[in-house]
Image (cartoon, rainbow, N blue to C red; front, side):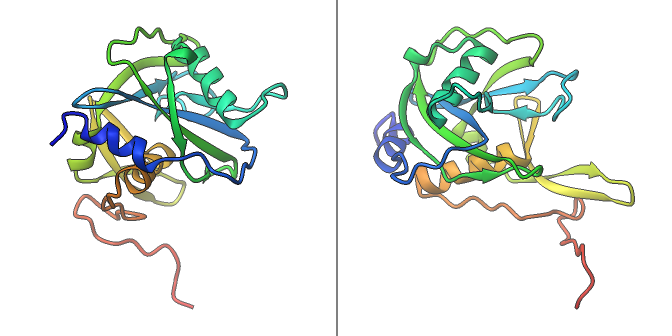
Length: 205
């Protein structure tokens, strides 16, 4: 087995979409090019209006002067983490994802050096950390409680590096495994409780 099996497979399988659709936002899925590749993640500032304290990939909304989804992802990653765009070896993208607010988000995938030096932008990012791809693949989903006015709903999540990865970020990781590694990770839409009982949100018609 080649010591860089995972990153080599990602490079072999991923491509950039021929049909280019400008997204409302883009994120960079930056993965260290090493034997045990790790994905770059951030914890958003607790003072942000949108998704405070949540784990996400570096990224954000398109600016009027941005010429492509790739430009959005690289610019935002630089602004949030000081990741030099020239340190990113772009290898492909993933299907567009829709956020819960309806925003279309494009994931861009690239490889970065293992020892890259990063600095969080304090008004946006509380923490930068790296999570092992192998660990994420092998970790079973656990329930993450989201409280609404009338009830609690449990979404699948992954616990890594003392953080909870769920929602859009987790769905992008599942897509990365599917399209980049030909691996289908178990990922239910909802988990009703820590006992993994299915939830029924609507009455039968």
